[in-house]
Image 1: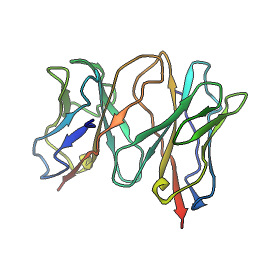
Image 2: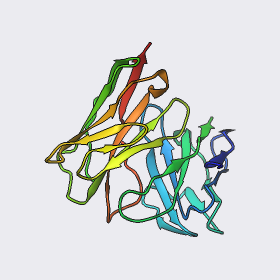
Image 3: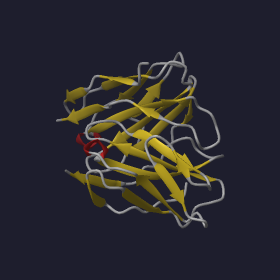
Amino acid sequence: GAGVSQTPSNKVTEKGKYVELRCDPISGHTALYWYRQSLGQGPEFLIYFQGTGAADDSGLPNDRFFAVRPEGSVSTLKIQRTERGDSAVYLCASSFGTSGGWDEQFFGPGTRLTVL
Amino acid sequence: DAKTTQPNSMESNEEEPVHLPCNHSTISGTDYIHWYRQLPSQGPEYVIHGLTSNVNNRMASLAIAEDRKSSTLILHRATLRDAAVYYCILRDWSGANNLFFGTGTRLTVIP
């Protein structure tokens, strides 16, 4: 079946602009996660959705970052007034959302964001 | 979640077994041990997880020390496709659902 997809695969923008990154999770997965990965580092958690609501947004670095998942499926990560330090690969993952510490997350290929 | 410590890099010859170590001396009784790997230019993918007993699946084996303060991911015959960054992650069964990746071990497979 189809995996997690992310669009666009690459995004180049100028400092100060607004960007939206989209994630299509695996059908039937109730949990959705956003991570950010800088060069040479492991992915860092940003936000986690269970259904339509953000269950944990403790990883969002500041109020320029916002994410929505209005119908419990597709999610959009929104970044306002982009800065050069926002340049990274943004990864989305989804899972069945079962509790218990063993829930496998399925990752998309990521969106590479470059802020000039 | 408790932290893990992994070597920055390792090398293996193709078709040889690979043992990737992970130390987690502050592991709690409710932490599961997960391994993910990330191939070049791809998102991470799940490899295996365990709690106390050793585990096997089609990709790898996970050997967990009796005191659970360390574990080893075993690739029985490394292939060039196994070249990736391997992350050892602890997940509390009752805690947050997000994954804390750390910097992982970069595995190079030599033909």
